[in-house]
Length: 175
Image (cartoon, rainbow, N blue to C red):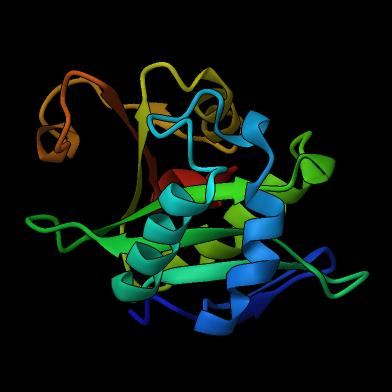
């Protein structure tokens, strides 16, 4: 599976993150409320955001989210392979400008990513901070189920602060 596909629908376009996207993406990220429930709540500041952006470039799985209506970058997300789980991929590191909150755009982004992942894999996994209620609700709305027990939850790096949600391909296609 290519971790940086180009995908689009009527609302958004996803494409690989490029180094020249820094300024446009930082404009979006400078809103402290985006990061308020995040484990890195200071990511709206230049130094933490720069580290995040560089990590995103190095990841080989980062995508920018572009509004189809105006062509502006409105956020980003990322695919990541899960070591020890070849049948799954993680989706995370996602954020959108607050003007795009409310579910419609997040759903459009996640549906593109999930549908693409399910062309190749059985499961999509989301690791979400226990304090990040907003992201937990958003993932639940698109079909994510909290994983209880060993399936993928054992792969969480920070077991004390993260929860594991999963969407299975067979369940996704039934909805």
